[in-house]
Image (cartoon, rainbow, N blue to C red):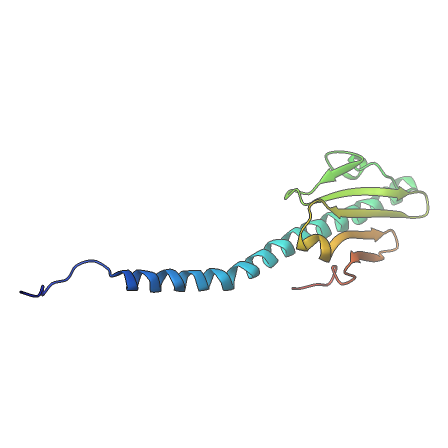
Length: 140
């Protein structure tokens, strides 16, 4: 019998080692990706609420009252609108001559709903979130 001097191709063992390495990389990186995506959605909701607060101040200076009408504040629909990612619904459940409250509510279930389900901001600048109270300042 003569041995082949020039073997071509990849052995099954080498292929399985590559598959295991790729699987380990995916196992490590996927949770980080999900947290990054969730953080981006939270930031989108926070930005919308801060824009509402800014526009409410302008509304108050011009009309001496706050409003629940999102279209008067420069948003496309009223009484609510959905953020670009579709994850949060923004509403202004309370507004009068003295104060307002704007709220962003998460629309889906899963782990994110257990972290930062509801954000809100008032005319006095008070920022709250539930169930986790650190959602406005959370970096991770």
